[in-house]
Every structure is written in C-alpha cells, then in structure tokens.
Amino acid sequence: MTKKQLYRPFYRHCYLNNGGWIPMQPLARKLELGDFGQIRQGRLMPLGNIGKLRLVYMTKTTGQISINADDWQFETGVEKILGNTQTETDAQNKQSTWHNHVLAFDRKGDFVFHGAKPKARFIANWSEFKQDITLKLTQADYSFREVYVVTAIATVDHWGLAIAGADGAQLEFAAQTDAADYFAALSHHSAIARHSRHIAVFEKSAAQPGYFFKAKKLVLSDKKNEQLLEQMLQADEPLEAEPLANWLSADLLNRVRLNELNAANCLDYFDWVDMSLDEVEKLC
Image 1 (cartoon, rainbow, N blue to C red):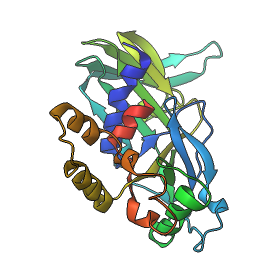
Image 2: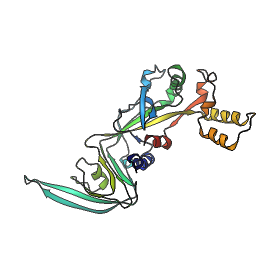
Image 3: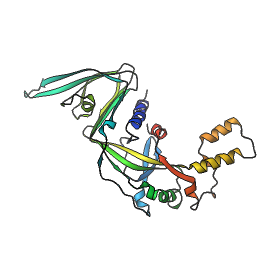
Image 4: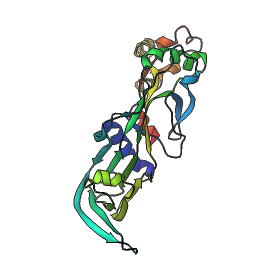
C-alpha cells in the first residue's frame, strides 16, 4: 500500500467529520481566500485570486473565528488499551512527567487525528459576486470550464496523525503534558513514539500550524444539464447503451459548440457547488 492509498481514508473521514474542511497538501504554496485554480498532480494549484478580477462587489472576509474544537478530533477503528504516567530524570537531575498512551488499530488504514485550537476565516458575501466571477472566469478574463475558488481557510495551532499500515497495528506514544486525553497528547509538540507495530504514518506538526480549506467548484447548471441530456436523447441517430453510459459519465459541456457559449448566456450554463468527496479523492 502506497502512502497515497493510506492517506485516502484519512482525507475522506476528515472531510466528513469536520464539516467539509480539506487538508492543504504539504510542500505546496499555502492557499489564500479567493484563490482560484485547478487540481493538478494531487494538489489544488492556484492560478490567480478573485480579488484581482475588478469585481463589481468586492469580497468581504471575516477575521479569525474560533470554530468547534470537537470537529477536529476524530478516529476510525482505534481503541485506547493502556495509559499511564511516567516520571523521568535527566542527566541534570531534572524531572519530567510523561503521559503514555497505547492505541490499537483494528484494520489497515484506520487512523487517529487531532488538531488543536482551530480558527477560520471566511468569504462572507459569496452570493453578491458569484455571477460576476462566473462571467469573468468563463468568458471575460479566462475561459475556465473547470475551476475551484477557495472560500474559507482554517488553521490549527498544532496537530498529530497516526495511520495503521496493517491489521492489528499498535502505537505506544508519550507526551509531556498534563492532558490525559490521547487526542490532545497526540498533537502536543512533545509527543514521541515509544514503540509501534505496523504503523505506517506517525506525523505531527513540529510547531508548524496545519492549514485546511473549503472551496466552490464551477459546474454545469442543472437547467443546462437537463437540456443537453434531452438534446442528446432526442438525436436522430439511436444511442446504444454503451455510448449513452459514456455520455452520462462525461462532462456534457463537451457537447456545447464554441459559438453557443458566450458572455450573454454563460450565467445560464454555469453554477457553483461545494467541493465534494470526488475532489478529495483527486487530492489524495
């Protein structure tokens, strides 16, 4: 199993359990509110920012807002089987107290994640400029047929993640914190792995914040989707089952002639939806 395959259940579970927030890929430029771009090589690659599109209504953004901390700790197939406190003395006779935790993972791909002190910033007036950026991104300034716009950015002060690489994996880790809760200990800057068995990933933030985002995706509007399907089904030539299935699974915009889509009617063709699990699969 590759690391990409191991991360896939984490991405899906993360998306479901913390309200659609998607982890930003490491080693990529940090996304900003209003960035627009496309998914390339497993990352959302920004190509510009809507703030530079000469919008009729300027974007309004919130300040940092604290969000529900419970949404940033989740697990699947994980059970705590042991916990204790240990005092150690170093060479300078300084004592330190460590809380030890032993976690058992049921199956390969099971994981535990915690992000501490989550905060977020949002675009607050999407509906005001939605039509404006539709026109500019598809006709006036660009000719996108697939594009995403970042509408919210969340940060966690520090985070921890462990993923099982095989059935029956175990992780013993310790943190120099008073927190008896293993979620908080996992993301603590002092967390270290004591022993592990079949653990494929044990990562923490190393004093670097974690970044997450939400985005809107440009899609074919329901109205045009129905019209294009009806045109296809009413075509003179009969459609066999296999070609029909191929058309239904393909982007129906491929059936739109170049001279049919223009600045006067583009708002009828396009709409925006929240980035979904389908895109999460592309990212991981």
